[in-house]
Length: 156
Image 1: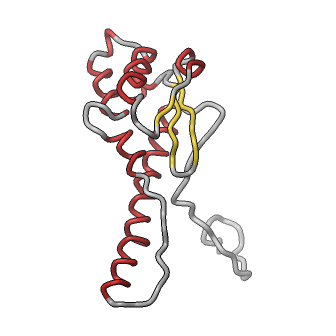
Image 2 (image 1 turned 90 degrees about the vertical axis):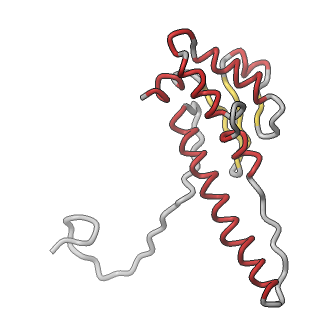
């Protein structure tokens, strides 16, 4: 008989398996796939913070349980950078995909620089703009994204 995870023999020894639901990604080059994965992890982080910290602390207060307030980071600004209508990364990307025959990934980068410049979790230095890159400050740290291929990947 095979073990639970393969065809090898079942092992009587105990083990601990860990599932990392916050699979944040940052590589030497980060593209559309990493952007989507990291956005999903931002949403998971928001849900976790809301469920574990905010709701539990509210329940403790309601039940008058003695506890110490836990200050936890709020990633709303990062989620706004992605989700905001007309000015968020996904709205800009979708807008550029509607005119894909007349635009390029570099044009997408230009629109991001123009519309996201005042958002606190967005950055693009002179060097980054030269290379059509932008930086997002995620809850887990900064990630530099290369816009090359974004339009084609978003259309698929």
